[in-house]
Image (cartoon, rainbow, N blue to C red; front, side, top):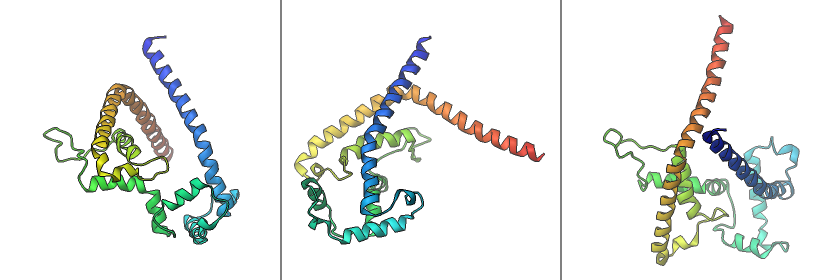
Length: 215
């Protein structure tokens, strides 16, 4: 096989293996979510696809009203997690804010003009650019660094004496992301060309068949 086909085949193989490992690692988290719905919220498997989000929020609020800190079956890690929360009670707004914590943090960076997304070109200086690749870069460089695995704010960011070290690490993450984008840009471009071609080809073929059948 030509070397270009070999590189593409190896990249696909590594991507397939990486996604397979990622799915296997997510199974444990998904099983915990299922147990939470099934045993704590009393939502059976048959109702998980049809129950409304308002009903889920109401059951979560009712569960929180029972004050789980007094339960004897909690582990020390679970008690520490509950103690780190700012509220003893939950409402619909607080649940939405916690689910959207990372997204709200990124939106705040845009609203405060902390991130400059303009292209350094004369005709694009007044236009903001946020591509999907740039969004992935910001998630890795900033969000994965600011928030821990439990989607909680890293407490080191609240200490002023850690500011210099954190700034150096953040700069290093930006540099690493820039190098990775530079290396994988040709492959990403090829992937996007294929995806967009197949997507719009399917849409175009659908409308062509639709209008030809009318004629």
